[in-house]
Length: 227
Image 1: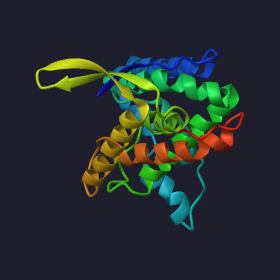
Image 2 (image 1 turned 90 degrees about the horizontal axis):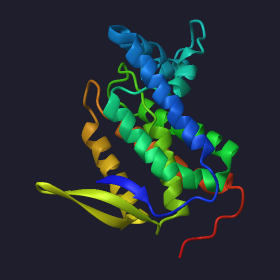
Image 3 (image 1 turned 60 degrees about the vertical axis):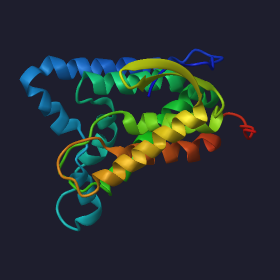
């Protein structure tokens, strides 16, 4: 299922959401401009689980802040254009309403914290800790978790494939997001034990759960319970 838009207008301009999209696109253009050396950015600024694990497991050797820096820098790198486009589409559709509730500054904190939560989930569960992780998916998954709490009954205009053609349907956010979350869990289970690159499904799971937990404490005002 591909979301097209939500029928849930925000009350304020999504300034941070737009800035995040612009920054992600700008970083991707930088990656593309490097040409054949694009992997340099991924290797240097992507998050390599075994390096971050080393901070917690090695009792000797010199300390390096690089693995901690990559917890954040990796959120703004993407492997290819579809990776970027998919993430930015979800951020554009769901981010404005979450930003509306949290406020601009708290939304930045929320985005970064849930992104880190998603990354750490993948770091300590991946079967191949030598493969670098990149992408905004963990943070955006946090946004989706927050949206589920805030607007479970908002309608999501969705493109749904039916055999050889597509149809457009309006799906309650609750069903759309729970279905999406279940897919991530199944993908994460299926990926256990697999070596090499792929989708960091468990980063999505960790970010989503963090978003559900953090949105109420970080909200500017009390959020009423959905009925």
